[in-house]
Image (tube, rainbow, N blue to C red; front, top):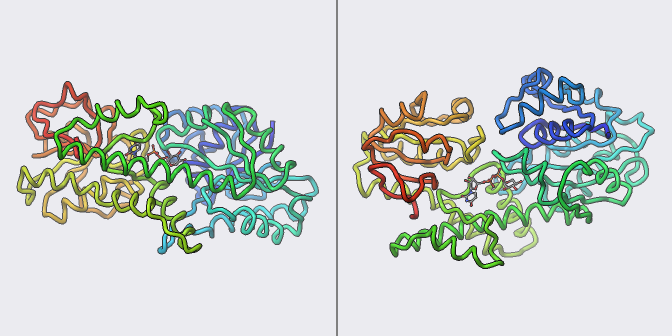
Length: 427
Ligand code: UDX
């Protein structure tokens, strides 16, 4: 059992804390947001992730998980995991202020510490951040020496929102970037409760592994959409083509080749731009990343064009089913649903939207002028045309009657679509 402090209780921090606490570690979440801290201490959580709330309430009740606003309460932790946000700056590069702030807070809280500790970054950060930002910030704030008084690691998260708990507990791999073997040994011990091969490497290699993985996945999505758009233009069934291509042992059946509206979320758009910005700083071209982003930006509009070919959009009531960027999450960050709504409003359509979990976040975070339905069925009953924008499983069981239905995300079984099914964005 290790005493772990998680700095930042967002999607990554809360999931990491809950899983480690459920595996027997003693975990404290530190966050500046009182509602988040109170929720965790009440065995609740302020985000939706399947299985997360249950893990939090069982860990809090058995005393292995708690939360606090005050990092001083974590000062006897052995491992500090930085899970704060790295938002995108105007030039696409990663804003590392929260990372540096967390490192400084940890250093200040440990000024009088004699026992060895490790500071590990879990947030997605450009190569060089652990060594050039985290390490000096902790040294300066604590007056201690890295490699002697404390260790430094980089342990990237590979969690898909909507699958975060299972992706963490059954990890494809755990990457442990380490300043030295003493740092890495401590993290290896912490992660011994997580299944999956462990890769130990240098700090910048661990930082770069995360960017390469996410850029690769995002590239696959744009590539899938390009192939699917071509298939649709030729009257070819993309899903058969995808299936056939994935019979090649070099193209994994799990690869990200599901065509649709493109990639949303807080990771792919930000991470691809961040690594592109780093390349540009090194005077390198990023032809593949540039094309990935360009293709992704154009994709959602194809669905609107498709509907506009069949119907006059002005004054039509268009029902947008799904606001979250992914099913099984309440997160609407960079969700393609928002692009659809914005474009429909621009074209003078009236928009009615619904999502099983993301309505609260939509109300809080979006100023788009869309009416909100209280259920998927109400949306269908009140709309002239239906767009599937997030593939929530529950949307399959709704009664679409004779309403025209367009798929932005693959949801229906091709053999059994709704009565007035008008096809998909690129199928
Ligand atoms: C991603 C990575 O998958 C995860 O490993 C990393 O740690 C964080 O970023 P996330 O963005 O949460 O996870 O969800 P993901 O399931 O990857 O979906 C991202 C977006 O791509 C969603 O909008 C999804 O609809 C879309 N997508 C995904 C596709 O359009 N096609 C696919 O085949 C897969």
